[in-house]
Length: 471
Image (cartoon, rainbow, N blue to C red; front, side):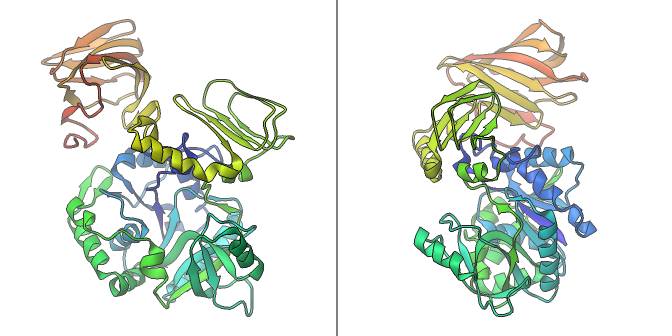
């Protein structure tokens, strides 16, 4: 069995904490581990080969995936990089092409919470038995309430009800509240979890039957792939031509081999702030408080701050989330509308849609402290032994001051070693590189000046992280 972890989502409904460049699967929302790490951690105790997953993500997130796997001492069978997003059916096809035909793929989104690991393992083992027989298995979550934010799966028959695989009568879209309540009352509808199990060869057979164009595009993308460090880069032109569709629409709703296994394991996809509040620990007033929070006469609220003191007085049923550059205040009953805020930010070209003030890179991170049209100030941290690319800028000059550690600077043809309180100037158009030869993090303050300060004003000549060809 090979776990296939889908890690391509943006988690826009959890803005401002989750953003396109740093989405929820890389954030420790429900535990001390990130959601990606928790997804992999709950595989402990299953078949031994389940400890070596295939992870599918986009190129922008590749170093975060690799670093988070390293932090939990896990080596992936592969990290497949999608050059463009094409939904779940093509993503799983890539994993099936990377596996042997008889390998069982356990397909798991990277951003789910499952509290009862024993029940989860029991369902997975049954799913593997069904998959070995040729079935395409999906996991249907036993509903605890009428929810309008999930799709539903109807089991074909409740006869002989119990813990077993059921044929599927139908998949249904997200219903209104009255319909959802009727589904729950009937006892033969389940929430659609988006988790699956099947033999790789069987999935490709069904894809060839119902979506041959998709399979051909995925095969071409896989055959044209190249290996870069720990990553497999799919051929961009071939994959861009692939149809965009989910597993449900492309295969599961059409095949006669689909079955559903009930999963009653404390499952949540944390699709909103209210869903996160539902599963989080609460104080005597029903509040979930994360960070430096002072709550006075406050009830049934989710309160999260990344740094500054967050104080509330006389509120009830609200979500308040503070980050370095944005604050969200929303009624818990309206949190599904957070996505519309993200859409408006995109329409207005606001950077808060995509990035936090702190931006993580494979060599470390930077924090944009202050900026206007002519200057920008950043705090840059370079990990021990790491280095930035050899690069130049057409529109900005840079001034660097070391505040911690030791930095080795390449500036044109010279190399300069800088210690604390020493500085250097990089003129416009000069090739340069910063690296940390020490054993503690290197921290510098960078002041950029120029007529354009965008992150795309970088020409890379050499880069140990494979970004020299990126624009």
